[in-house]
Image 1: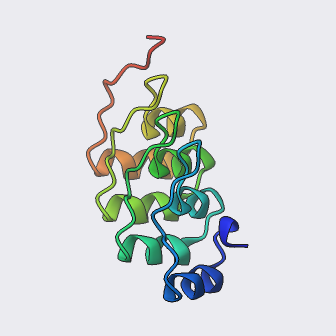
Image 2 (image 1 turned 180 degrees about the vertical axis):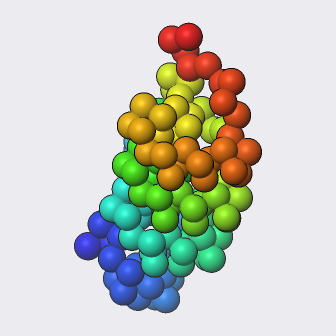
Length: 126
């Protein structure tokens, strides 16, 4: 269940010496998985242990972009408070703000702008 972001499992394995910094062939980390599954406790633990908050997968998609895309307001707030790059762009030039605007996640849009997201970044399609 570690890939789903189960807190007790990850903490147990970490305590036994398992690496929390491994990256899959597609570029995903445990942090990506925990964000995808909205596991706030696991995300906080992984960040406390030094996981790269801005690691991008093969499509240059960072955890903040995943949280914004899924509408996870609390997760977005946690990542931003931990200094996630607010304007990280993916393979197509999209930012977390693009995702939030496209899905009309007003709370997330507000958070991203509060933390300095630029509204003038264009994606690869204009």
